Length: 293
Image (cartoon, rainbow, N blue to C red):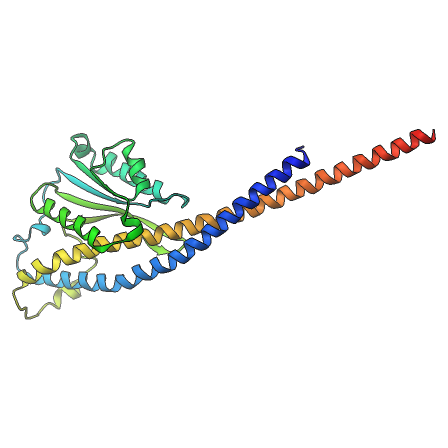
């Protein structure tokens, strides 16, 4: 059995850790509230724009002249990976890196072998994990903290330009979608070409008897880049909210675990102290009997 001093040192260490994890949980909860409000307020606007895009594209006789709608054989791939700059958030970053590895091993194995996969990393942690096995073409460690629209819009513009000029044939975003503070959904979402119009149903496509001014093609040309920039920005906000939710959950579990460990340590301490007192009493009684004899 460990000595009383060793148990006291362990109790003090666990109590210190418990205070840290509890403080981190409260900080993450405060940050989560702001991040959650940001992403939930943006979603209705983003969904409505996607609905408008779906109606416009279904009303257009042909989209062949729109380069961002062109589906072609996939020879070159761009992967945009969004993670966090800090750890202590469970499997948040590791799951993103595993998803990227799965895509490179399964979906885009041939392109990866030819060196035709560009990886764009937003966030430090996933970039570090991915860089152990693969080349990272571009990385940004400020966006998870600043969530600046201009910076993410610049990346979206570059990807649209690369796709239009056939430098890449497919762009996919790997990130954690925010569901609720305790749940994050790992997604590998198609960014380009534009094929999934986010569930625009047949009824919506039928109700497209509109008068357009200027032409439908001109509206699409102006609207599509804005929608894609907003989509990229929404994925960043989703990832940031998911990060704080994951960290809050991880710190809550760590605090609970520390509480359980403290209970066990205090029980051991009391048992050891009781045993020590009992031994001292036995020694005193034995000494007194020896003196009497």
